[in-house]
Length: 292
Image (cartoon, rainbow, N blue to C red; front, side, top):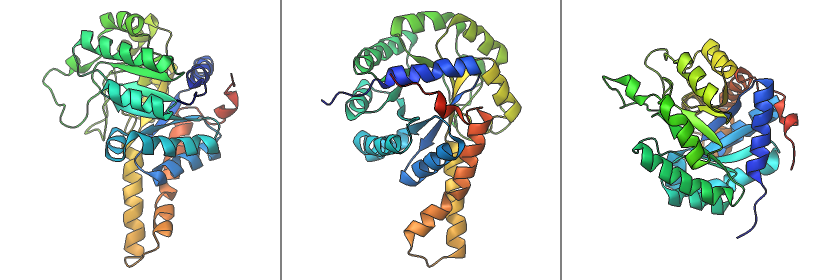
């Protein structure tokens, strides 16, 4: 297998800068090459470092290798862009991503019992670190539609599990559930800032907030001040993309010019991503990336 660059060290260096300068690394989900193109255009325009996160649906539909090719092309275009596999749930998915050349992977064992989450995360970490790949784990359950419960506190990260999970797995970053969720929120999310403070006090590794779509700007700025160093956004990108496609088709219902169709549809997507980059205080931060 071809030797990869030490992406893990590059990304760790970037997170060190993020901690020092109090910004969050934005991670954007994409499902196809046009959403990816929108992310790259926005990153260039904002001179920002970003993670391009292959969505679970996309890599399961198209295959890890196809998504890696798209990610590798993006990294060649923009030095501070890193390909990331989002919400993998099996070791085999993570291994395939490492072997294909991803820079970063997320192993999501949050739906498993705690001991099993530790076990699978440790297995992924051992393999990924041996190949210079960054690993994100998850504690608590970052849900979405269909995860309604009479006991929402049961979904939150448990403070007493944090230190053991980090020590026993060796993860590089940790996604935590503090009242955030994937998809559109039915009401403004009630983030548990005190819980975030407690977790931050226990660890120096980067903390990650999934479910960035719909979080109020003031809340986003607050969680970054409190220690969130990566923010994931996906649903709003997909929504702007599909709305853009509808708008172009309404104006040109008979068009067969697919290049014009898709390139026009992503214009509002680029604007949305640029806004998110600025909200993460990440504009102009690409220059901070230190090569190893």
